[in-house]
Amino acid sequence: MSLSSRGFLCFTLFLCSISVGLPADPFVFYDWTVDYLTASPLGIKQQVIGIEGQFPGPVLNVTTNWNVVINVKNNLDEPFLLTWNGIQQRKNSWQDGVSGTNCPIPAGWNWTYQFQVKDQIGSFFYFPSLGFQRASGGYGGIVVNNRDVIPVPFATPDGDVNLFIGDWYIKNHKELRNDLESGDSLAAPDGVLINGLGPYQFDRAVVRDGIPYQIINVEPGKTYRLRVHNVGISTSLNFRIQNHDLVLVETEGSYTVQQKYSNMDIHVGQSYSFLVTMDQNATNDYYIVASPRLFDSSNWTKPPGVAILHYSNSQGPASGPLPGLPNEFDTYFSMNQARSIRWNVSAGAARPNPQGSFRYGEITVTDVFVILNRPAELIDGKRRTTLNGISYLAPSTPLTLARQFKVPGVFKLDFPNRFMNRPAKLDASVINGTFKGFVEIIFQNNDTVVQSYHLDGYAFFVVGMDYGVWTENSRSTYNKWDGVARSTTQVFPGAWSAILVFLDNAGMWNLRSQNLDSWYLGQEVYINAVNPENDNTEVELPENTIYCGELSSLQKDQARRVNFSSAPMPLSPIDAMVKVVLVAVMVALRGVFDISGTI
Ligand SMILES: *[C@@H]1O[C@H](CO)[C@@H](O)[C@H](O)[C@H]1NC(C)=O
Ligand SMILES: *[C@@H]1O[C@H](CO)[C@@H](O)[C@H](O)[C@H]1NC(C)=O
Ligand SMILES: *[C@@H]1O[C@H](CO)[C@@H](O)[C@H](O)[C@H]1NC(C)=O
Ligand SMILES: *[C@@H]1O[C@H](CO)[C@@H](O)[C@H](O)[C@H]1NC(C)=O
Ligand SMILES: *[C@@H]1O[C@H](CO)[C@@H](O)[C@H](O)[C@H]1NC(C)=O
Ligand SMILES: *[C@@H]1O[C@H](CO)[C@@H](O)[C@H](O)[C@H]1NC(C)=O
Ligand SMILES: *[C@@H]1O[C@H](CO)[C@@H](O)[C@H](O)[C@H]1NC(C)=O
Image (tube, rainbow, N blue to C red; front, top):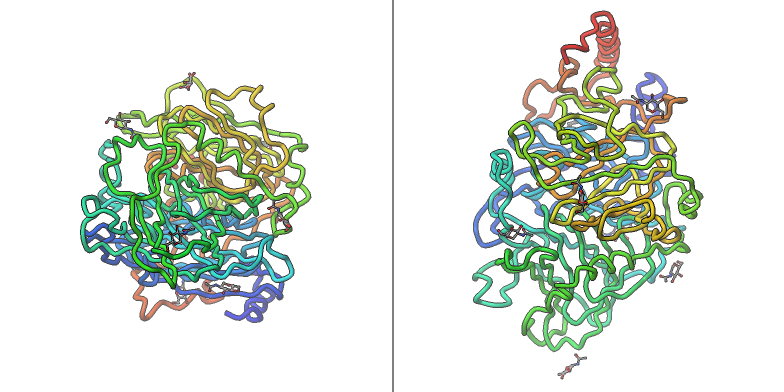
C-alpha cells in the first residue's frame, strides 16, 4: 500500500491503526516465508527453521526512522511469531511479537508486521519467540544505520559482516521442548555454530570430516565492522580472532568508547560491533573462535565454533592450535570486562530522550525492583523457573489484547518489588509500571549459571554488577556517568546486575531471560506502562490484529488455512467496520454479564 493510499484510508475511515511516520520517513516492504529446511551444521542431517530459504535469515538493513512492513508467512506446522530484539517499537507493543503482545500466527497463516525504527541506530537481531523455536534457527540480523546527517563516530568501514554465534543441539526445538516439559534439564549442547555452520576442522581428532564452515573473505589493510550476536540457547561465548584485535564500537544501539579487546564474552541475546583491521601479513588464514565461557569446561566435550578469516593474499590455511580461552579461571575477568564497556557520551546518535539519558545518574529513582532468580524448582509437580518466586504462565489471551478489550482476569498487576518468602507459584503477574517513572531494577542471580535478561521497548543503563547479594550500599559502586544503554545484560552466578530505565514508552513490555530454557520454564514478566491521563499515548490496535484465547470469536477472516499462492483478500473496509462494531458489542456484553469469574 502506498503512503498516500494509507493516508486516504486514515482520513476517510478513522481506521488508521498504524503509526504512519512523517512523509519523509521511507517505507520498506518485505515478504518473508518461514519454512523448515534441512541442514547438517554439525555433520548430521536435521531440521532447521529458515526465513526466505536462508538459515540464518536475511539481514534487515534499515535506517533510523524508516517504516518496516514485513509480511510473515508461516509455513511451519506450528504457531509462530518473530520478535525484534532491541527494536523499541515506540508506543507500539502491538508489533513486539511475543506471547503477551500478539496472538501467534497459526501454521499456514500470514501476518504483516508494521513498525518504525524510531530514534534508534545499531546492531540487533530478530528471532522466533515461541515454543523454543530459536533452538532451530529462524533468526537473522537487524542493522539500523545512522541517518546521513548524523555522523558515525568512526571512519566508514570497508565492509560490514554479521556473525551469529550460538550453542547448538542436534535435537530440534520440539525434542528439546519435550525434554523440558518432561522435567529434564538440557544436556550440554552438541556444538557452537557460526552463521549456521559448524566448526572448521582445526583438528582431525576433534572435528569430523565434511562439515561446512563459514569463511569471511577480506582484503589486506582494510577495516571491517563485525556485528556479533549470541543467538544461542543458554551458553555464554568468548569471541576472538587469532592475531587480530577487536575494537569495540557499538553495542545494542549505543556507540561505546572505542577500546581494544583481544576477545569478548558475549552472553545469550547480546549484540556487539567491532572494528577489525586486517593488519596481519597473510602468511595464512586466521581462526575466528566462539567458545563456551563460564561453562564448567569438564562438562564441555565438543569443539567450539570455528570460522575462517581469509585474506585475499593468504598463503595457506589457518594452522596451529586455536587461540586459547583467556583467563578461564579468573571469575572477575568476565565481570571486569563487562564493567569496562562505556558509553561514548559525546557521540551523536539517534536515541530516545537524549535529554533524559545524558544525565541518568542525576534522575531520582521512582521505583526499585530487586528481581531474584533461582535454579529450576518443582511447582505443582512441574519443573519451572521463577522471578521473585513467580513462574510466568502465558495466558491464552495476549496481555495487550486483554487490556484493550478489558477482558478481566487474564493478568494481575501485582508483580512484587522483591522476593517474598512464600511458596513459588505459576501466574501471569505483571509489573504495574509508573508511566515516565525512572525505575531501578536489580537482577540477583541465585542460580549457578550465568543469566542474561532482556527488556523489550527500551534501552536501559547498565550501572553496576558485582558478586554477592545486592544491598542499598551497593549503589555507591554504580557508574552514574557513562554506563552503556542497551537492552540485554548478563547476571553472573551468585552476583547482581543493576539497570536504570525510564518508562517513557507506553505499552506492555516483555522482560525475560534470554536463556531459552530459563525463559521457557517461566522466567518472564511484563511491564505495563500506561499514561493514566491520556489514552492516546499508544498506537491504536492494528486493523490486521489476530485474535485468540478469550477473544477468538473476533477472528473471522483467517479461520482457514491460507494457501500462500492464493492468499485471501485483506479485510475490506466494510469488514473492518463490522469488526469494530462486533468488538464494541462484545465489550458491552461482557459488562452486562460480568463473566470475569469464568476466565
Ligand atoms: C545497508 O544500507 C546502507 C544504507 O542504506 C547501505 O549503505 C549498505 O550498503 C547496505 N548494506 C547491505 C549489506 O546491503
Ligand atoms: C497476508 O498476505 C497477503 C498477501 O500475500 C496480504 O494481502 C494480507 O494482508 C496478509 N494478511 C495479514 C493479516 O497480514
Ligand atoms: C566518541 O565519539 C566522538 C564523536 O563522534 C569521537 O570523535 C570520539 O573519537 C569517540 N571517543 C572514543 C573514546 O571512542
Ligand atoms: C610475516 O611473515 C613472516 C613469514 O613470511 C613471518 O616470519 C612473520 O612472523 C610475519 N609477521 C607477522 C607480524 O605476522
Ligand atoms: C557440570 O556437571 C556437573 C556434574 O554433572 C554438574 O553438577 C554441574 O552443574 C555442571 N556444570 C555446568 C555449568 O553445567
Ligand atoms: C498501578 O499504579 C498506579 C499508579 O501508578 C495506581 O494508580 C494503580 O492503582 C495501580 N494498579 C494496581 C492494580 O495496583
Ligand atoms: C540467594 O543467595 C544468597 C547468597 O548465596 C543467600 O544469602 C540468599 O539467602 C539467597 N536467597 C534466596 C531467596 O534464595
